[in-house]
Length: 302
Length: 268
Image (tube, rainbow over all chains, first blue to last red; front, side, top):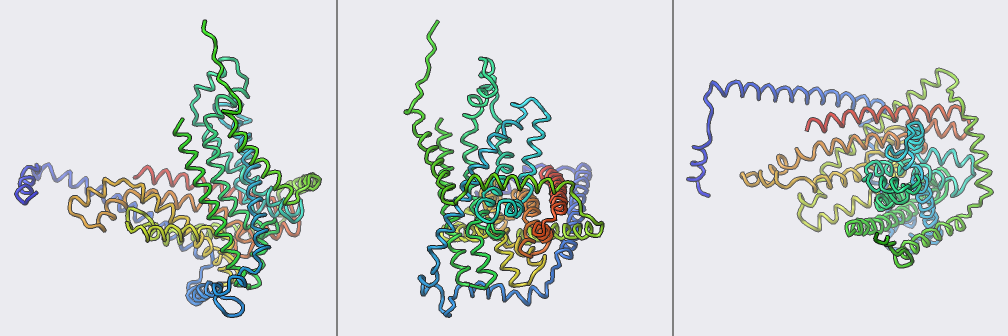
């Protein structure tokens, strides 16, 4: 494409006479000005909110600059053993507690596993009750919805704190806390899936005289199961992360060991445990992602 | 009339599903044994939990001055969540562009960026809070920094995914009319992803309001400090009042952010 073609294009672009162009230009100017005013106003509100939040969170830039070195120092210290050698020179010394930590990590994963599965089962039962296309009673629907909302809004660690008082220290309060939180979070997602199903199979089962349970079992479940499993796998990933910190309040898993090492400044232990947690979480991430992809493919194959 | 053909059900169709279910359930049962969870403990605990719930009624802060203290802590929680998310987002934007395949075409850089985001992402907010407490001391400032550090990588990952799914045609249009790569990103991609970013940040402010309520448990400011304190001294009416305050606040934030999100998506 040479300059000749370009100039040809330029000649054929129609240019309106000034009389017609002026109001259009004015309207464009007004629209741009209005948008700019809106931006400035939004920006001002935003900056005010940031300043207010900074005041509320007791932000202290001076302290921050003074101590920022400590932050990087901390990570440097994480990389050294008590003997002063870098951690990678003596892995046996670095992971001296591997046996104990591996057991605690296993406990953490089991807490996440049992919590996820129990929570998913509860969510499975609840989600059909709060779907408008399956449950007629508006009162029941909104009651179940409120309950699920409560379960997912209260943070799992708060449940864990309360359950530690009721059930005593150990894995049980951790499991229950994750169960309740999972039921709330998954219940909402499951209900959204059920809300969007194709209603025809359900009507088919109803027309051939099926009960409510038959409608759910043969009309709804086959449509939603793959989605449910995929959401549950995602939740399992999140719960492994959650289970690694419920130990902070005494609810089992590796968290207790971690918080003690951080509080007592056992730097090498902190880094060793963090490495183990990160490896574990990544492994779970990769495995569940692969499973989810396979699930999507299976669904596509139908 | 033709006979109804009943499809064959049996091990051939249901075998794999049953096997998977059996494995899942045996791991589940093994978990109960390994974690030493006995049913008598569950029953006793449930009975005690019932007592606790009864003791929680009605929610009551006892004195008005204490209510004001809680309100102040709640404000602090909101400030932590807001400031932490905004700071995290500020750092997440460049990282997100770096980790997007259609911006940085170098496979090695892309792989390293993604992996390191994933690594840092698996460290929980509470762990970050403990680290920042060591650096800047106890208080809400450490909490805001913890939320920011935990969010940077999670948000960067989401943002890079939004960038990767942006429509290519706008970029091609800018390139075709002679724009540089920088111009292609500025005028081809940024206008597409900005509303998505805003919506993601709003979602994170919402979810961080929840995280910020527990960050006080380890001493990083906000309402969590009072919550864990009151649970420890078994003042259940105060506990339920604090939980109620959190619920109301989260509902309010949800409503505001839904409104804002609608405004943003409506405008774009």
